[in-house]
Figure (spheres, rainbow, N blue to C red):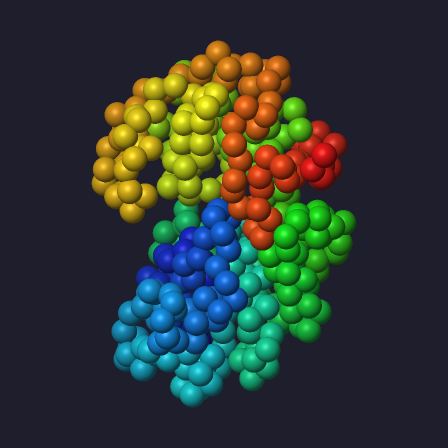
Length: 331
């Protein structure tokens, strides 16, 4: 039986777990920045060769297979699975929000390819794949489920909701029964919490950054250490961008972040990492007032960032009331 595993970047350890003939980690980060277009996402999976197609395709992160060699190179994922007689495609996506977004995206895509869709098995992963080593993944048992048409419908509904120009449809998912895709609901809750607070103007991860700095965590390696923030939405580089937003606006909440970060190329990972390490952070008086709820950070600083398909600006600022778990529309 030829077996393929589709997973997120959190599941790269599965490559060495000998559970499948091929493991395909999907690389997209959907939790920050503008979402890729449908064309871009389709081209990534279909191996396009047109101007504007992704620089990296699905097969670029898959090594030589002992079963099929390099036959997967430069072809579409669905075409490969059909042509080389893949019998089973397992979906391994843990509860982390970006992984759940990847799950609903890939299910939405595969829904229109029934020959492949009928070979899918959803593995209900209830642990953090990133923290598991190959030996643990090799032996770990997970519950497997067939993917029914109702599951495809829910995935398509959730993916459409996240791509919508307002977060209202995502909020509506919290009141629905999502069946086998139940992990999508807490992931959406975590994502909604990354909308600004009605009181402080801070998203959940921004608030945690200020809280830890207020407690004396002045080094970025402390702030960015896995698990330190107790939030699971953003990776280290995305946390860096959030910290810059708190430090470099007209009314900064954070002092001590190396000013070179404001001019360094975003792709200069080495230079940016060195600048973060040089930084010694503290809260400004304004930052203390924001953290205490006496000031609204967004009233004093410009906002232009993406939340799924929603563009947040000062004039069109959706917020999330964590206490009442309510979505607050722009005034």
